[in-house]
Amino acid sequence: MDLSLIETLRWEPSIGFVRLERHLARLARSAAALGLAGAEGARDALFAALPSSAATGTESIEPMAQPLRIRLELFAEGRIAVQTAPFTPLAANAAWRLKFAATRLSSTDTLLRHKTSRRAAYTAARTEIPATEADEILLLNERGEVCEGTITSLFLDDGSGFLKTPPLSSGLLAGVLREELLETGKATEQVLRPEDLAYGTILMGNSLRGLIRSTFA
Image (cartoon, rainbow, N blue to C red):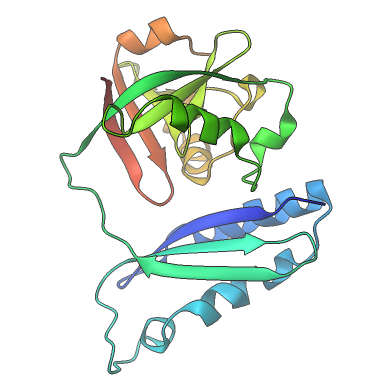
């Protein structure tokens, strides 16, 4: 199978991996659904990839004082690769500029619910609009429903007390942050159309960066 599964996590000096269990659970679910072996080795692979001071919590020549971005990839043959890099959080008052892509997602493509290496639609959406004009690109499905950004889930704060996020049936990734907000009662699923986004505050988010206030460019 020419496909791999991807999990991108944040590691913090004070707390370790952020939402680790949710990331591991999603990887296991996707691996089972798509017939990939090796997901059970993900936890050990993640900790093995940390610098020794980060993994053990002890002091070393290279003290780990900053967060890390950690990307795990599970390949079809069961091999796991992990890459680590310094992570710089966005400023607390950061705001992203949004634009819609002409590229459409398919609501019937259930593969979109899994975070895989098949990202042709997201790459196409990114190439439509220069990075100087937008920080994130939103995609619609064939029915004109809002789905997600190229690297983030979408949430709408319409003042109701719950964040509104598109349902998986619209055709989108089952994001880890999205899952947490739904399970903790902070968000609820609702079909959204572009005109709905004019009434409230738009937040784009993922497990790596959290929620980011966003407006249309």
